[in-house]
Image (cartoon, rainbow over all chains, first blue to last red; front, side):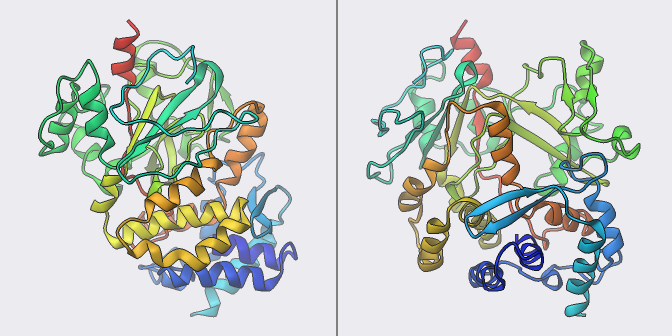
Length: 101
Length: 317
């Protein structure tokens, strides 16, 4: 959910502070909000953006090889995004993975 | 209640439900903690009720003509099923001893299969596929990737195994689903079941560990993020009530209007259901990468849901 909000912010669909708001609330209730919070993060495969992309390609929302994301147009308004560039998502994941490493 | 319903639930306690307004059922009456409430999921001939309340499972069972008088709380899951006159559901199409141990191990281990040939082939899940009838095909069907459209009727001889009812929220759309994990990804396999009745006993939430409860709370917060900014703002202020004993009574009346909608096209329903997948594209990949470990983002909890399919079929003759 945090990644979806941050990806929306990167695409300019919501303001940066909206993504921060979602993450802050989830962190307040004790939920993991960074990839690095996941137990076993250091294990092989997880810290690899390409491996994650391959796993996302198995998602049930994949249509004709195109990834579908559910992103935010505002807090409280989700939309189906069909035309997200995979290369952009890969860069986004790489940035997220590198930040805490 | 829908008149075409094959069965009518039986209650000792009164139900607080407003008349239907513009095709939408809303629950606004104040709820005593012990009163079960019924949500009518009005889907025409596929309509069913969801019963939500603390200890409502036992009360409902005690009032049912099929189940005999209410008695002491069951001591085990098997006894729980026996107390309502049913056998504990087990996958009939599996030979006990070979696969059953893996199927019933509990938590994540209970819903992971070793392999799926369709999945390994990398088939697109939008492929349309005709299912053959017969025992062999039915045995296969439970292993097919979810989302594959089957032209054969869904299996009707099985209980629904579970539902998303995290922290009293729940996702009450048309179908109950049993998702099964495989090494290729999360929730990829499984079968769809249309329930006749869902009973959600909120007392079961007390048995969750804090981590499991938090995972369920994520599901609640998701409703705010994806569809209701005011609700999200309310959660931001009021989330500390979740550490108290009785958050659910105040939660339920806010959450229930999200569900049980009617008079929408199939397409509209599918679209709304898709939005529930907020964050799941990332989340499922991360879960698969960590081997569905307990330390990962799980946005779902499986506290309690029983479908009385067999019982209701019996009552409808």
